[in-house]
Image 1 (cartoon, rainbow, N blue to C red):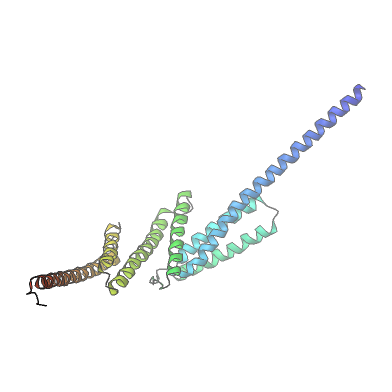
Image 2 (cartoon, rainbow, N blue to C red):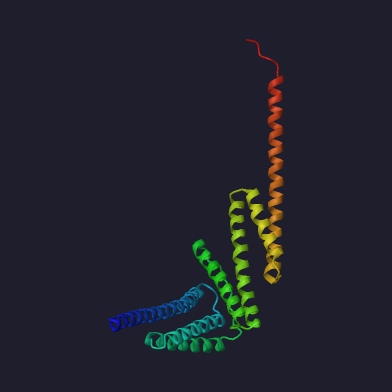
Length: 255
């Protein structure tokens, strides 16, 4: 009887031990999948940003940064799941892509395209969202030490200039539309907001200086138009009051 009880106890211990080992293995696999999923999300985000770069002036330097970010994440996935052939293939694919973008960057060194804003409002919003995500990504890479401070500052300034241009030009577009509809008060508010945005920007460039001068001229025109409109309104009001007085004091007709 004692032997049977001992065997039962040993069997229970074995079952519990096997269960604990199995749970531990499952937890390890789950942790691996979670870590791999985080790296995949980085790759997906980087590749999505590269696709959206098509709406911005050509910038091989940022493409390089994003490809390096993807490659770092892919290699991290490979170390987490070393037996995955799919991940190994992804690493090779990104390495080839990075090499191509580096060659393109070297051949286009010093060449910069002008940023032309699209007329489509929805496309403009998409571009603005892309720029904001790019700036946040570059800052994250710089904080992690994956991007040197000089490159970060150079690229961030270019993105900041585009973001400023989108904001200012959008305000001016709305201001001009209001002006054409003779909504002078609204037009003045849009132009004043644009001028405030330009003046408050920490980097005063050729664009901000020339655009401020342009906005100030437009504001003067609006101010003159408002004075003229107010003068006409005052004259009309005075004439109406005069007509009312004439009507009140004119000789009464006999019935």
